[in-house]
Length: 289
Image 1 (cartoon, one colour):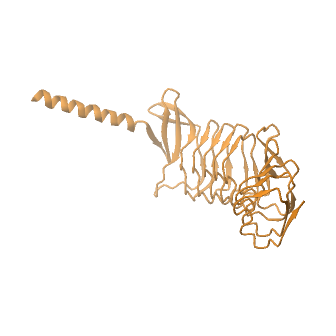
Image 2 (tube, rainbow, N blue to C red):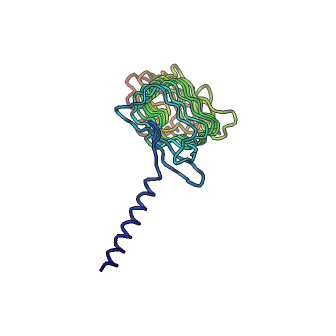
Image 3 (cartoon, rainbow, N blue to C red):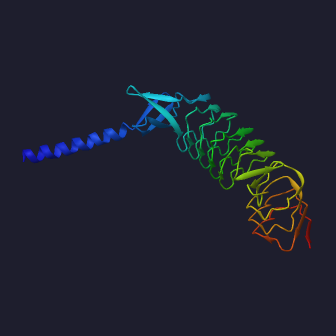
């Protein structure tokens, strides 16, 4: 009987040790919380540890390294939802060495005005900077190859986005950027190209995004075959001419273009669901031969 009790106690002890090992996979340093990604490579991800008694006000400079139990770890990722809703954040410096910014990482940081993204960042998750409504400009480094869905959704003061060499842009990445006037990409980008601030596929056959603050008349270039879903949505466009080569206009492509008065297209162009919905001033739709 004593042997059985000792055995049971030993099992409980081992379970407790296992729990201690799990707990040792994370640690805190000041206002920041770290999760160990790899002990062998000494890498961690970071998030904000909110405290009502010690809130992070104004400027946040994430360090390149963190020390725990006399071991130094490299910070290589920002956790999902790491700083979500932190309205006190105004200046953010992400250090060299960070490779990934997680989904929703800075969602709702509505007072963030100054953002530094390091050259090492390769991926920015969905909604990472959603509703960061005071950002005015974004410049992505050439190593950034992917931005997720709604990454800059409702960044209402964003005027210019430099996309560098990005290879994948998620759906609605710039939706709600009502002051966006210009998109740019690296001249070496093979997946995307820009003409007069408008984003196209690399071969120019698909029109992907028209900056919402770009006003006046617009002639879709020859060679375009498809206008993407939501490409012109809620833009300041007043008139658009669509050439015969355009085969299809995507879902809600011109949705909410309140200043749009005139559309010229041909009968061969298929028009997607709600492509011209919520365009209250659209008075003239011309079907050319």
